[in-house]
Amino acid sequence: MKYIFWILFLCMVSHIRLKAQEGQDHSKWIFGPSLGYQYQKTSFVKASFWGLTDLGYANYLRVDGGANMTWKGGKTHVVPELGVTYYLSAKGVWPFVKMETTPYTITPKVGVGVFNIFEVGAGYGLGLENKKGLGMPIKGFNISVGLSLPLNYHLY
Image (cartoon, rainbow, N blue to C red):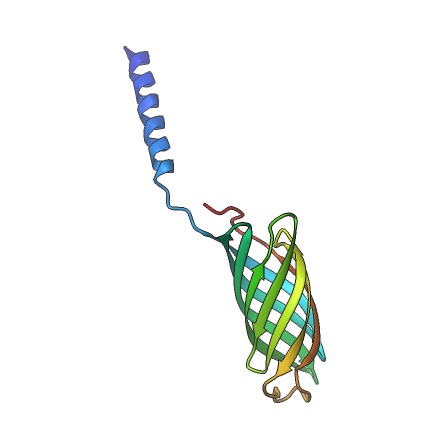
C-alpha cells in the first residue's frame, strides 16, 4: 500500500509540474547588457541595456539605451544614447542597419554582428549641438565595436 501511495503521489506531482510548465508565459524579447568602444572625434566607452525581438522571416529589431563615456581634461563626460537596430538576417553573421541618437548627434550606421553577441559598425554622425566642456563637436565618421551579453537567449 505504501508503494502504491508513492507511485500515485509521484505521478500526480509530475503531471502538475508538466501542466505548470505548459502554462508559462514566455517573453518575446531577448535582453541584456552590452559594452563597447566607439571612435567619433574622440574615444568613447559605451555601456547600455538592450532588448531584441523577432519580426519574422529571420529579421530582428533591437532597441537599446545607455551612455557613452569619455575622459578629457581630467573630467568624465557622459553622453546618453538611444539606438534602434534592424538585423537583416539570422544566419550566423547578421548584417544590420542602425540609428543612434544623442543630445548632440544623430548617427546612421551599417555593420555586421555575430549572433548579436559581437558587432562591428561604421557610420557618420550628424552634429546637432556641441557638448559643453568637451571642447569640440561630436560629429563625423564613426566606427564602433561592441560585445553584448544575452541574459535569455531564446524567443517563444
